[in-house]
Image (cartoon, rainbow, N blue to C red; front, side, top):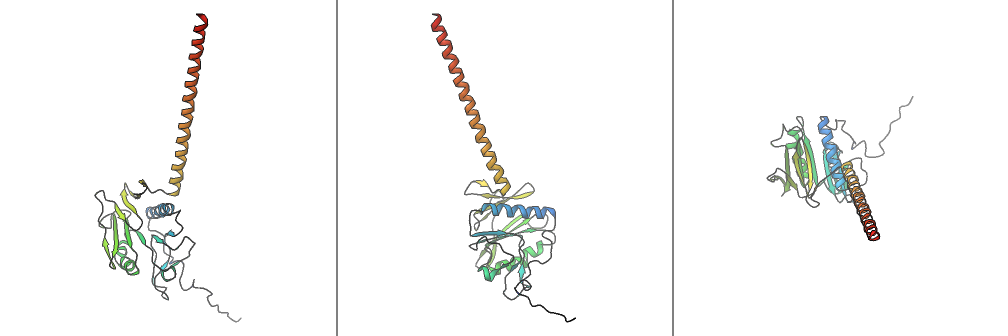
Length: 238
């Protein structure tokens, strides 16, 4: 039987959609990454130009499929929310504006070394690192801002939070996790489920207040009617 050879019809064989590596080292890493993505996606949900995603193969040299990174979290402005299989910097016209890595025992050297250099070279404006188990990095939360082609570490505020000028958000470690504060709204950034739960709670509180107000008004009216009856009775007796 004659062997038939096939030629690829697109770039998927050239630029794979996966490197067959696990999404995260531990359950805590994976949950943290998913939660952060959920918060950022929810926060920017109304902005059609902002794309936030996780663990996508990102190629930064055209024609070189070995030149890739796979950020835990990235946010890119001005490229739209349409679905992507991979991120090719030359086709998108830019690198992401913000990248965050969840460091682990096996990744923190690369996070502070080669990856950091690559992100600076391709123009990622801000690079944040979070030490999930708080045992590997110099501090549990680190942020770097690109200045004249090099990363300069961002000085934390007195309470430990680090400001992302790119996202206009503040990151802070709390308890055994990490949270994000929105200085514009004056509230913590929520996941979609948390936002929906908060909205339901507001509706329930408003409904309860309205019900209490109705009961109070009905009680006052009943009391007023009873008072009028007593006055009328006293008038008749006299």
